Image 1 (cartoon, rainbow, N blue to C red):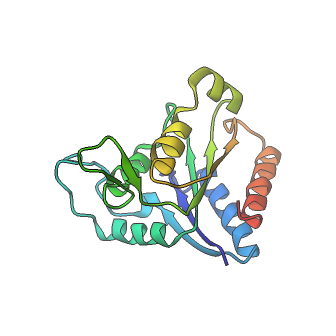
Image 2 (cartoon, helix red, strand yellow):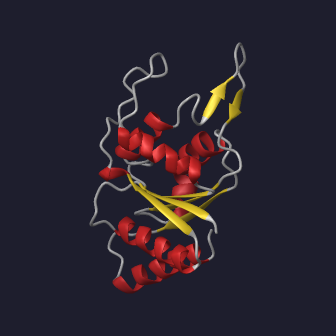
Length: 192
């Protein structure tokens, strides 16, 4: 049984991202996966990495529980919108506070190199856009994907990291949204 953690990074429960979240979860459960979830907006924590890496801020109970789920998981599914080319602030704060030295990676003493502490895990990013994905890639270089995929997940040893773009979402008819929900449910069924 594959251990899947679905992480929802949208701060609005009424968003289409929550529909995608539920669709993926439904598919994964149909496939017989062991599924846990993190809804970042429901966590009680300060998203500000107040002292950077100079001084550790104690992790709140919700972040400690989230970290246990991340350690448990074999496959992480991140669902979030792209806002101003990046991640929502609460999602960025979640990463800042939790993907820390000693947890997700470890710098080597007197070296520019680091050890990746999350090897053996895979991930899939499902992100919504209000522009065509080709334009987001071509015109902007897909900054949110680079940040989460390359500068966070792969930096910590998570590979491979696949990406699915959904969009443009704004003004889309219900029939198109239904097709997207079906597509994401199938990803869940195939445990991707």
